[in-house]
Length: 195
Image (tube, rainbow, N blue to C red; front, side, top):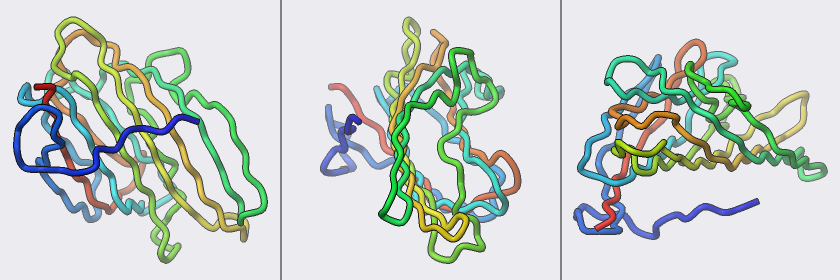
């Protein structure tokens, strides 16, 4: 399993290489949240913190190149680790998007942390690289962690992966949404300039 780079410090400056804090959104009973992508930054980082869902739902992300339709095709793969009460873990390679193009949203995490499970939540980190390119497909990396009590067994899940948004048009928006119902949580957004 590979580890992703987490910059050590966020700042409010716009110098090259710095992780610049852009916004914080607290969501409550939300059916989705959209964020604009501008040409001011060369990459964007999104932190989804303490997400819970109102029902048995997945949390998805999707991309738009026209600001309205979130149908940019995505192909992705990830590695998955499950720890069951500290006694059993599995490791496998999954392809949520498969070899085909997903245009209805890519799974970030299966949110087993339902509102009925006190103290449990889901968290994710997503980095969108070079979203403003008019030449190349866009790349992204993600890491997630979530826990739940399933069949009376305490479990923790960790997923690491990445993929390609298959468009040469600039990405104008990213959207996070539950597959059904609503979700609660916090989204922090950062921008990074190359120079």
